[in-house]
Image (cartoon, rainbow, N blue to C red; front, side):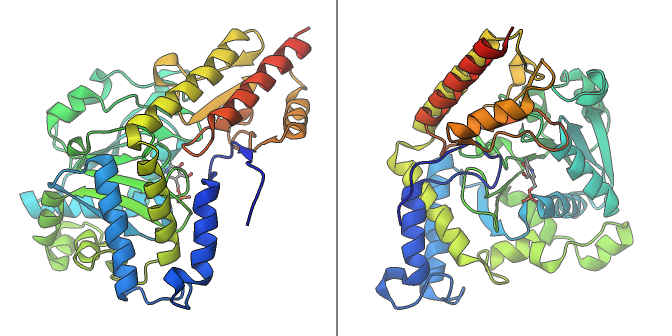
Length: 393
Ligand code: PLP
């Protein structure tokens, strides 16, 4: 059960610590020497309940989750999150105010755009507050000024405001939640799929956090949710019939947040092996010094890679404004035509893999999630530097 440490920069599924995978592989066959693998035990057994409890406790510790918020897990990935965030948050608003109000979307890349499209497709009331592309010559790569969405939020009621904290495809990250938005009191729904656990955050500022597991937390198959308890209470105040009367689409029962929380994330069968891997990743993070230490390491990796690319700004093009460059997904292209294949082949010959950009934007993307070591980033930076020097003429 060994492997050479990969220098892998794939955007997701992403690299996991080798020690975590080794432990998980053993537990998959024989968990706690009980003769059964972790994926074979009942999701209602004592052992499974313990895994759920441990994982929640470790998450609460790492993210300093206040008592006002609850943690739970769902299947269905981030895409299911787009749907159930919209239906549940609209229900919460209806439960609290007895009427409906639209969800407002701040779109800074393709994932927030997809979230809006899904909310609209389902027939929930959804509105784009601002699309950053419209302010930047049709391209993603900037954050909109606060006034571009705050004027609307101040003049009208929204059931929630949605943003994607790190746009994995376009490499645009909010350095913090916009202060005006936090102060407005509107419920903030944020997709943290690709930057969760990369730095400390103030969970109290969010109404709902959702994050697919397959980047910084574990394997595909589960999505983490952190929700304000008052939102759960508000959803419970409204009946299915009342929602129908108001024209608000119901949430499927497996994604009805109060039902899932009441059943401790096991209303239906929770993939317990996937959850166990999350738990192992969290324990590993805690052991290494928690989010402060991880943040420092991530900053060091990011600084090294961006500064190397910037040094060769006549050779590499970085399409994202400096104030919102992603610390997780470093997106760049080569200015000279015809060199992309060579770049990729030479990188691969040094065992630097997973660098191809998303099919919708092309170019390159180095995803430097938590599990990517500083050593891997040093090797990549060295290659980026040498490739530019050799191919500039
Ligand atoms: N949100 C973000 C930020 C993502 O990066 C992704 C996938 O990479 C998704 C949502 C969609 O997740 P899934 O493929 O699990 O539905």
